Image 1: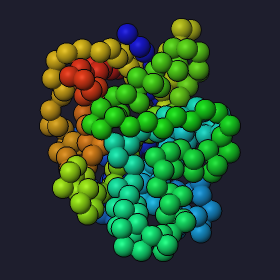
Image 2 (image 1 turned 90 degrees about the vertical axis):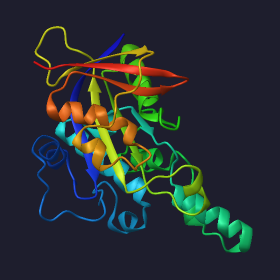
Image 3 (image 1 turned 180 degrees about the horizontal axis):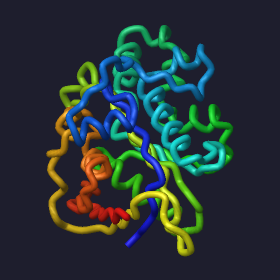
Length: 262
């Protein structure tokens, strides 16, 4: 069993641009009156903010929000960034351009096509010299990222930033593995204290064989078409105070999660 304290949460989807908005929606069904259509990560300079792909923008938006909510210096945290597919719109553009006019491919889009683009932007924008991990495991991505973050804490790190995100699929890729909307969520996880009261719920996780939790919560149902929707039962539970769930972990296994609220 791996354990950590959930110090803070970051969240962004269209119509729910913060964890406060997401929690209000999960509990009461309330939606904010005016929500931005695109995240605007303040970690980046204005021109970089405009050019950054939506997947990078949403990842950095929720990552910074989680760090600020935990009163943690972003530069001091090791990070784990997880995405089921990376930026599928850029992948589709590159495949189509290489098939038609390969010499016209955009160097900037090529630069942003790599799976660790968000992690790279984060380390540059935050000035972080700590290790940054980028991984993918289809619908098991967030569970595998959570295992990685918890393992780093068990190995001695005081706290780790975990970020999950995915955008919309386009072109032929959409017929193979669809994804709708834009979704990002982040956690700052910290070693469980032994001599003081925890600043958030205690998270315990272990591998099991039971089915994954159904996408029944309000956040899960709202974003069910996004490739990262498999992570949302955890965020529904954090918002509502529920204490048990199971996330798909790949290979027919699930990651069982228990939240202990003070």
